[in-house]
Length: 429
Image (cartoon, rainbow, N blue to C red; front, side, top):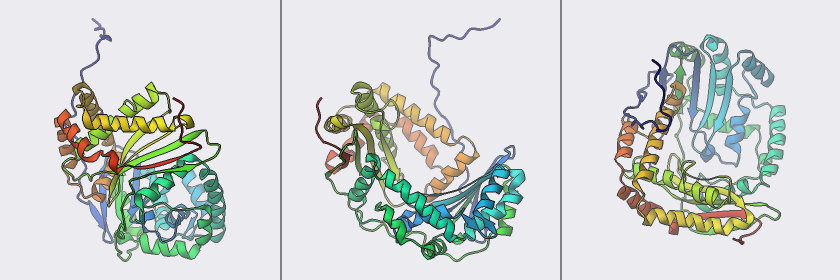
């Protein structure tokens, strides 16, 4: 007899009981570079990611880290840019580069049956980039034109204004303009690559199917390199607690960024801090979304994120609102932060966010590629093998009193750094 499902009652929410955390111990070494592995022999794909301390925080000229990363695939070793593109397409592979404030990466994703054909190209991109003049000039023209367009957008201007206020003279500050590309030449690219893309400073992450084959092929292809200082000092980091408004005539919307210092993952208060931020603006049902989007209709979206860099952490609340709602939006942001600081979170809301967070954590461990990315995060921040399992247990144990404590301790409006870019600062509501 077929049993009918009762759709009038929501299924019970089950707690996440365990996480499949990959080993932090390297499987092997390639010329002194540790190789970390997350393996599933049943997978047909392999992902190889080589991570270097070559983020924008290491550059001596604005945009140099980005330019170097972008040019790696524009010709390397015996391969021209066209050949790299054609071979990548022929084998259905993905070869991409990326750069952040701390790290840069080169990644290959391909069928495990094509590793032999693609690893020589991948290694050439890492160790023998040509930085050809024609392709570099073309890259500069394209990127300058794109940057000029982007620098007319209020959200991009606001990001730069906030960065200058918050990061000051530290290595994490973003200061760039289209003309900065004219100050970079091939010699700069070569020097930055030689200094920051050294194998002995790297970490290699291999995930997916035939990891042993990938290791063997990389051992044949990769050459040893000299070591280097992993990262330069942060510099002067002293966020300015102020509000800065930049007028953008004709803008229909205002971009708003509100930031304040956060705490590192190692801090004993971090689990409660994380949940408090999620309640405030860390998911679609957050208080900021419910108030400023759903109730007031000022914006399509607003969020609060915790940004963990290698040497510091910060929270940023960001949104774009109709120009006439700028002042009211700032008032509502302050209102929600103060409500978090002064009112106990209802148990039902807290349980919802705890379960949402646990589910998101479980999803982040789903699949070998995701687990390899988490390994990178754990190693970068010096987290222990048991960190995420302990984090999960602490999440479930958090009480409304814990949220009130961290909100009062860390979510301090007196420490806000606020950047606003738009046409006006008045409100008609």
